[in-house]
Length: 214
Length: 296
Image (cartoon, rainbow over the protein chains, first blue to last red):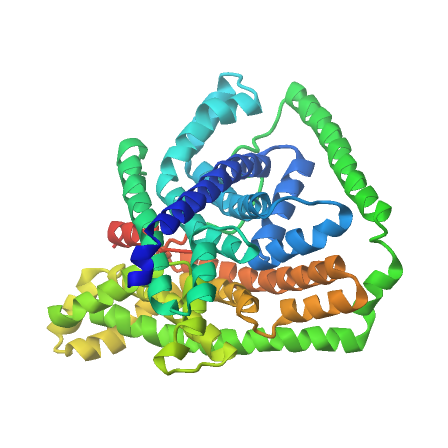
């Protein structure tokens, strides 16, 4: 126990890193994911193919394999970034597939008449999506997107194995230096709970604000 | 729903002449852009000599394939044992949580809520490094299986609970009315119906478990990724090795998700609202509670 109290500052810094990692990755994942979801319903066949390829390859590969591939493999073709940046890139690419799936299901849940009305008004496909369908689709998927976000907080822990000093990375370093794994890792667990529980509440709050029940 | 609604969807209404022209232009432009990306990537590879045949050849030789296959078999073994344990833990948690005894209910609630909220990696690492000082000495295999089982037991517990709650209350009441005990009602009436409804969610969680077993490499588990690393170091083709392993995972998981998708479709044909697993493959079964409460 003492070891955790002695390192409270370290845990705090590590939590900040986890938050940065998660937020950056989520913003990127959200943007890519929405684009892929739009590609998927677009009338342009090659774009649909790109979206399917993106989602199916990335989602079906364990994120740790993606990280190995990016971190150790792609250096061979000159793709080199810091551990933190690599983690953000891999986590956002991986998470974007879940965002895409979720947003697609939201798009499919928008009543058909909405799109038909838009078409009747002469809106083009981008207008139709941007003005009519997406705003409604996104509101219906707030809760599932929230669970994607919380999953991301937890997935971000693997960055710790690649020298990023996030909660997991910090705890691992502490374990190696102190040989008191149980309290140190319990501290890390508490740190993750401190982040993921309020995230859950915020999602709930947000949902009540914006969601439309269908 | 998580799986691929046909991409045309409702937006693919018949287009007018102008719309068709726009789509044609967009098609040409996007093909050019995609081709450009592919060419740039290919040049990156060839400039760095990564297309050299000798770097790829190991994956046509049986001894290398056999070596990698052994790694996948290890993964399957660990995943299989973890699945059985996780299902057992999940069943106990769900039944306890739905039971009448408040004293045993809250530990089950605590278990599910606590472990579901933690990174799986943290649990696997914990079972690996934190048990030995306490006098237990799990092997890498055991530590991995234990971590997976603890975590997935919590997730499955939540899925089971949602599945059972999703049934119409009348089912349990009817069973009671014809004189079945609670246990009989659970076994003969509730569980068979709930199991069918839960099947897609369970299968997709088990696929996730299989995927997550790959985390074992971080505590030194001898899986395909670890072996790819050995091949990569030995033949100086890390990039190709990891790409090959990724391809294998994609192939296996594509087949498995087709199966889970088919189950889901079947379920819908039977008229039951399936337990909702939007985008949660990776994690918490949050929306499940909402949807379980909403139907039936």
